[in-house]
Length: 392
Length: 62
Image (cartoon, rainbow over all chains, first blue to last red; front, side, top):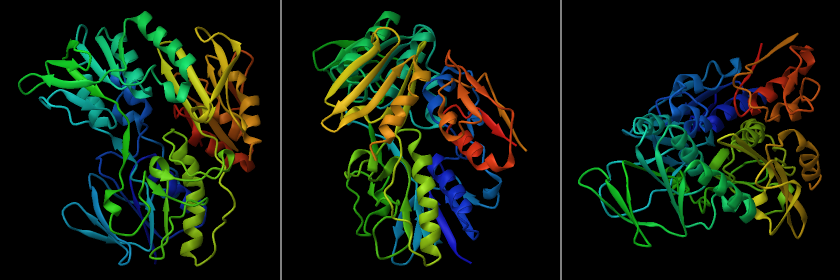
């Protein structure tokens, strides 16, 4: 009897277990997670679930019958791993033996060291974060959001709809500028401003004031902003510290090959999801970590058969990995949908409509089309997705 | 037969399911999801993939 330990009880961990089963692995699986919840869908945490209309329990993913016999160790952070001994260590000192390891420990919000009180400063990643933050989102509340990426902007839209006063402070020149580019980023800023969001772009927060709880923030341009709560959405850090000391490539996530295997002579090991820095044949040979919702599922589909082969003593399928990065975002009545990697483009073209209304934007680099974004034009993106898939 | 239900209160018409099982799910001209409520047993794996990739997790497969 073999045992696979999956570290991480999010979407990637669940899909990895299901993928192992469909690849024919029928021995034991243990999934260890630091949160108390079974795997659940995170995108609503910045939208419906933050607005209060949705129970956290209703966000739980449906699990396939094939993983009914999986052992779940929830509320149980993993703090260490000895690949040579094939054990992981849990917080509290217990250890688990494994024959094969799946790294699905994901990412956590980056936190900045800013002087002042810690009370009232929140990140938004987990159900517990959303439950804590939503207590503060009441009409008239003064909300400061640090960071103008997707999470920051989605929270801004949610808070405005709830009647809060919202300021967004970010170093970027436009909201979501890296994934969307300058032109669409500016158009999204105008949509937010029309609803009452105030942006402080090119600036940062240098200090908070208040006793134990934040009462105001000082910006780098000298502005003072009142704050009942600060929501920090300034990027993420891969949860790989527990793997330290095993001679792995942990620079920006965990490096994998095209079949999601982690190169080590010590144990059969794969990585999935937000922390897996993997090559994608659609976009050259550079391995990248991609924090899009569909990537845990896509990488797990590949990682399951890989680990099942390794555990059976067989050579895994090492053909190129091809996955279409995709993202979605809902802000007010606007729906963004993207395929490919618009973030690596150096040129954009609005090919249909205008950025202040419904439109389609194509993104190019020297190799040609690398991405497409539809603004309220979801149904028309299929041909672009097909063209992007033809890059492989 | 595979029985398919889509919670249309949850569905946001992103159309991800269409790429997994295009004979079962499609977006119509106005961008709204249309789908077959039943599919042949041989389509189960693709229909389950469609349910997996739905960002709103609106698809149930029985």
